[in-house]
Image (cartoon, rainbow, N blue to C red; front, side, top):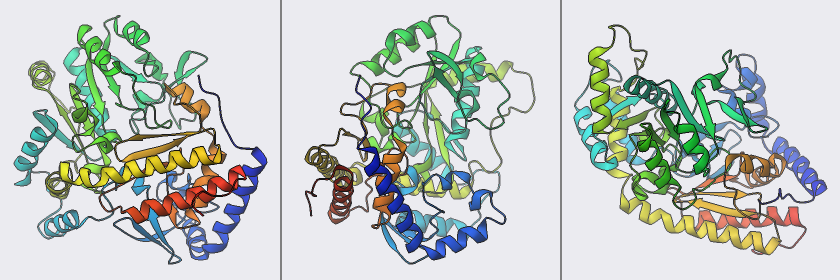
Length: 459
């Protein structure tokens, strides 16, 4: 097991304090907006995660286009966060903007299908290899719906998730290990249930534990990311996905792959790139280029189970679906994404830049003697605060060091580069250019020099 690896604490604290002071000094208009907004918004933001950047106050963005953000104080930034994958194809790509403008003049939502429905359904089926689809407002809604359908189709109650997973705001997935025992995830607001009553949890890459959990025959669904992405980035061991698929089939459990973050792998996601065969497939944030939308699809075999269940269930409200899901604006944006962005050509242009970023970060880590490594899944790269890669969520969360992460991302932010504030994730998109990657590497080089005390490699 790799050890927890951090730079000298005094250097980290000094750097973090200096960067917070620099942020406050250079962003007076954001400071004023934050104070004004605090009168009516929780912590001064419309969604409380927006304060998780470790800054003295939120950075207010006035404009976002391509890979460029302009803040309220007119500073320009190169964006490698991209809305934490919500805008992973760039901000307002022309094809999506045009589709939205066109549809906006023809109606936004009617609770009835429009002409794009048949086209998008065919595109989804051909693109991702599953025949049946539904639209939701978020990936959280999609995962929640999949859990419900799986329970209805199998007649089983239990859900199995992976420790350290992220599937949005799905209550059933908020389970964690504490001293080897499952418990409600710490920090939950207002949860009154013991979620472990109907949710099992195992570690990623632990095949014996997976089989033991499934062998009881009461698990309706395994809901899994193909790569762990919310506790850092943890890769599957060779053969892990083969075992996951074989064991779920052996014990009659359905399998859902949540690709909301791993669509970075390629235009067909990790599922298509590695030829996984899930029963359900979920894709959220990026599918509509930033318009709130998500999709979930399922196989013909699952559809037969669903149809049988529907033919026998008691009449009444299903509890699945929301009024704005499947609206015309969502479908128009999805069609533009599927036809113009989720293509081999687009990914082929962007992938070499992600490789350039990964190689550059690895070189910087070696030069500065940092006890870290870098991991990449397609267009997504992360710095891991351990000399070797963790194999599961418990290890990954032990190695995370929030103060170092905050210091490094604040260093970048104050120098016009945006990376995520949590486990320093970076995305390359179709709008990213070599000069953008090189600028990020230069800023990271200087930041690592500040932490290591060595001279910069790219200075």
